[in-house]
Amino acid sequence: MSNVIAIINQKGGVGKSTTAINLAAALGDLGKRVLVVDFDPQGNATSGFGVDKDSLERDVYDTLMNNVSMEEVTVPSPVEGVSVAPATIQLAGAEIELVSVMARESVLRYVLEPVRSSYDYIFVDCPPSLGLLTVNALVAADSLLVPIQCEFYALEGLSKLLESMRMVKGRLNPALDIFGVVMTMFDARTTLSRQVVEEVRDFFGPKVFNTIIPRNVKLSEAPSHGLPINRYDPRSKGALAYAELAEEVVKHG
Image (tube, rainbow, N blue to C red; front, side):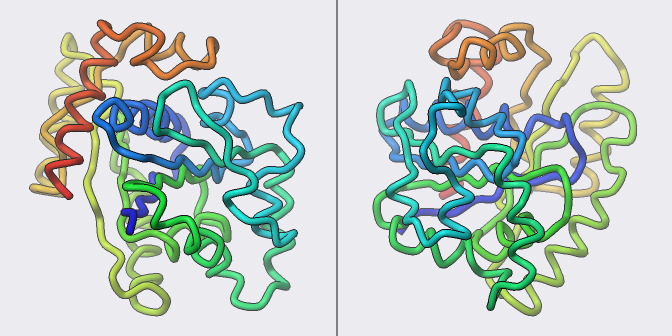
């Protein structure tokens, strides 16, 4: 059975989609079978893998609301072994439509169940909110991967995320835990970045991965080319960092 990991932080711009895309691609290069479920209506993980959203006949919305299987919506990525369940803006409607659905918090878990044996890892790229889509991700996940940017107010709002995790753990998903915390957008030239890393390590302890993702122009450019960093510029600092992170993730289990 695959390890289902929700990549989550209710703050936007912290590197959730960047991590979903590039960690999955790096794990693919290690021979792992990975599914990235784009669960954000913005569809950044979808376009980051070069999937043309306008040409899609169905997407993740259809698995939630129209009884379409996850297998039917999944498309290949540029990396062997890595597949994508794409999202479009249509997914935004699910936040409202799910309210009237029976067991509305568990729909994603239900649709992922048939494909869990096909992958080593399933990453759910969550929207930057704590709404019903994110609650579905929390219920479906075995654990959480939390990207935190090395910037001022990095820990702001995380208490709400942890509170939501505890509520879901207590009521709907007793096994839910934090898989790890990854520091992103690190700038070695600034004292602030180093201070934030220390602050986060003090807060989360050994849950913080040793690998730190640097600020890297190539990482920012890669999505516009529809490629993960290990295909766009495999020798860049960003590619090397995500390769290291992938090895840590595999050791973690």
